[in-house]
Amino acid sequence: MNVPLLLNQFLDRAVSLYGDKKAILSEDRAFTYSELNERVNRLSDGLRKLGAGKGDRIAYLAPNSIEMLEGFYGVFQIGGVMVPLNIRLKPEDYLFILNHSESKVLFVDQDLYHLIMPVKDKLETVKHIIVHYKEESTPETGYDDWLALQSPDAFEREKLEEDDVCSLLYTSGTTGNPKGVMLTHRNNYLHALSTMHHLRVRDEDVLLHVLPMFHVNGWGSPFYYTANGSSQVCLRKTTPEAIFHALEKKGVTIMHMAPTVLNSLLQYYEKNVPAIEQEVRVVIAGSAPPPAFVTRVEKELGWEFIQVYGMTESSPLSTISTVRSHLKDLPLNEQYRMKAKAGISMIGCEVKVVNDYGEEVAHDGTEIGEVVTRSNGVMKGYWKNEEATMETIRDGWLHTGDMATVDQYGNIDIVDRKKDVIISGGENISSIEVEGALYEHPAVLEAAVIAVPHEKWGETPHAYVVLRENENVSEKGLIAFSREKLAHFKAITGVTFVKELPKTASGKIQKVHLRNEYWESKGTAGRFVN
Image (cartoon, rainbow, N blue to C red; front, side, top):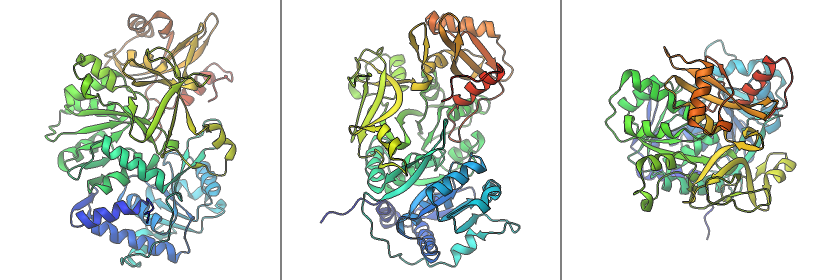
């Protein structure tokens, strides 16, 4: 008899083998896996008493907290669908997502409750709002008191199939409303098995949740670290100070984060030089980091750098950048460059880069095409949006919208999003490559490059730059520096110095806002709307 692949099996394993282990840690609390399981049972019991059942959407608006972590398993036991909400949206966005998803129950952190208040009366399907860390003045049910009233006994789970949807994740919309990505138990389960292998997850690991759990479930980490009995640290706010404190005091061995967050850790380390004794792996997800980041992380911090690539629609990870054994005789600088690439396909994933005719690009590191993938992790589709599903999944392949090259060793290197490629005088320019060159300047803390119009060349690269504290460089100086580092047609033609760059909650730079800002500064509406 086939046993369906259901995510609660991961918690069952942890309870069976690591039940007495202090496993879930926060700033001031710690729970064993057995204690976590009791809280999960209470949550499921409470949800069922509220009338929530199989297929119902249960929304969470919360930072990385114990309450958020236990939500996944508690919701799954009733056969419900977890709807994690981005904590950096506007009230109108939450109104759309909650109504579009037809969510029945909303769990919200007290610190974020003010984002729901303006639209609370317009929620069409939400019947209950329960508040984590509720203050007396908040007119809703408090989570702790509510949870204490429920039964911790073994919960009679809803009968599920592995192809049942378990997560509904809304991707950020730049030209319209966000789309809800439907991921199934099978999607997440098989993704977890592949990822835990490639990241070498083990029970000695202590994971610090840095990537938000609403961000593709923090890259699926609530699943594969739980399955292995690893300890997990939940911080409500992940500042550089808090991250290094967790590294020192809680023995963190692995973290997942965006390149911008890693950059902030490097800046903190420069000034404070904290002593970290244990081996640490840092998994970088998001936009491609400059190769200089790899060098600094491995040489200065002494941490292992692992670059991964994926997207919400593929559960999410599809590739990993570890250097294969037969290539470790390559020069170290070439290995660092290789580690900064998206890398090679993970087990269970087929990934290729194709041209406009669907043919694979040459493995020459030059020809650019679109990344496409197919795997058991590819989403079931977009919720209530069949047209968008058909546009994205064609002939069984998920079209990512990411442009890349492939080097002679088969490593995929993301050069840009389709909409971010700069076409100057008929030549394709990778904004990521230009940013990487700018990061080599000692005065540059952060850089983002966009296309701007040019009378002769059509468009050219323009940089938005944040300078390091007490450092200075002129626009002319930075343009000259980029011309030294790059082919002249790739060099920036202008610079806007800013105090900070707009970012998503996961730390990814939002170039759409930079494009809009550029056109607003020119007093006109531009064509760069995506």
